[in-house]
Length: 403
Ligand SMILES: C[S@@+](CC[C@H](N)C(=O)[O-])C[C@H]1O[C@@H](n2cnc3c(N)ncnc32)[C@H](O)[C@@H]1O
Image (tube, rainbow, N blue to C red; front, side, top):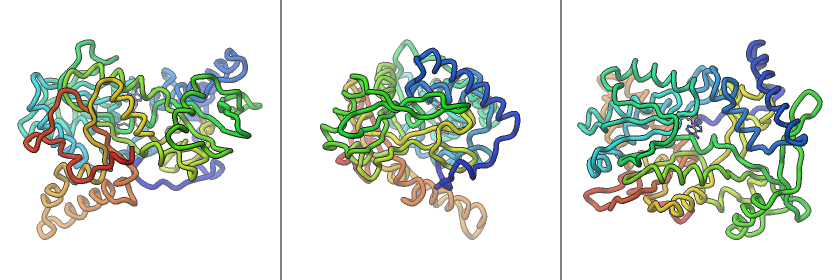
């Protein structure tokens, strides 16, 4: 999400209309049934899975607008075509180096990044044989198809929508922008020297938090974190993105040769679990406002957590990938051609277009906007980065010591 959204108490959020409320109540009934079937409580990961992805009801599976000015948040590809154009520049040396190159985008949102990437790769004379899209939301898949037909009708034949990762591993580039932050997480609370799982229960007509003793898997995850960060302070409430490692391992299995770029907001583990973040990183987004109550009208808000990039890097290496680089979004884009793109508009001849472009570049790169909060992790298989064949985006600023 791009802008620093206004942080809002739920009482101050705009009230959803009657249809939206009815939709949310239908989803809540499904979640309540799961709670009843689960001895009165479900893990937050199960709740988040339903709230975001329950068929026909979850935030990403149903028809709300989500992205852009009239949605709930703005992502980098929605801010500016320059974002996808820079990714395309990083793609070119990889696509040229492998046979029968494909691109795979996981979680393609409105489809705008796919359209801009294909357009730029076409301009650079380096189209992939296929542009694969893996998208869990049927609603978004339909929107992606509409976007691509409208923006790049001549290239849409190359785009293939997948229901699951390809059986035959591909060669080329894999992108996932703001996907890991939307994977379901488990929540924990360390209190009085003991570890509890924060779970979801029914609370009168609403849903609410409760705690139960942590199971072995959660204990082992938190012990792994503490072995690196030192003991988390008493009272610490945080999240473990247990789905991220298997998700990345399956992506790695699907890549025979090439580069995976994971772009998201987050940090290395020591910063992610810093005592200053003792309340965790869970955040919800509704109509360009952020708030901290994931039970406010389930299905109408996006629910996200920041990404522990150390966990992703470890999972990638464990899956046989090689480390390609870790840097901020701002530096990645600057190293991938953004500066030259800034010079494409002429302030004398077209002041308005130039001003617009400068604003977009600021949003994508400034530390106070998306530039530093968002990071890029590169993992690869079977590439030999050399000066003639670089992983461009990581050339200017190497942040690997933060992992
Ligand atoms: C925050 S949106 C980001 C969309 C887009 N990448 C962008 O930057 O605008 C998250 C996207 O990931 C998709 N998604 C979430 N989990 C997924 C999964 N396991 N596999 C594929 N797509 C997933 C969602 O449906 C949605 O399209």
